[in-house]
Image (cartoon, rainbow, N blue to C red; front, top):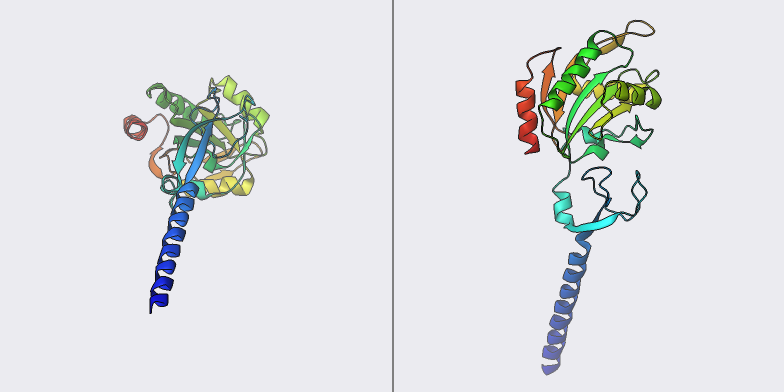
Length: 237
């Protein structure tokens, strides 16, 4: 009988020891390091691995530790544009996915640079919105080309400079034909090539929250943008 009691006590002790060890291991795994460029070349963008800044090549600096629970809480919803896995080329020649813009409020519009009618108005509308918003690292303006064959990264860069939209808060994207069409469908933007150089298209400016969910759309050219500005201000507060 005594032997049985001894065996039971040993078993309980071993179970408690293993449970404690597992808890320590779990807590250890729940912590993930967060890194950031010391020069803030990409604003407040963070990384979860050591490395160097893709802009200035300086070593990333560890700034904090996030638990895996916190990371899981930032998982994207089914309605998020960050579920789209198409690769895009920026005006700087970098390849990104929309998911790389996660964590920022996004103001997005679809244009093409050779447009002489609606697009200049859309560009003016985007700049008008920007002028009414306080400068912040939590907001990004994105212009997506519906003419990826013509609008190469080089052409997009030239267009950005011509229109004084070459600041850090602006990004121009060139995708594949399928990728552009997929993104347009998400935004309910319709476009059609009507000649070798011209497209007919919807005139819509879209606002997304930091999780990539569509919050607001402004349709038309030169329309009252008070509601759009108000929505953006709410999101960046």
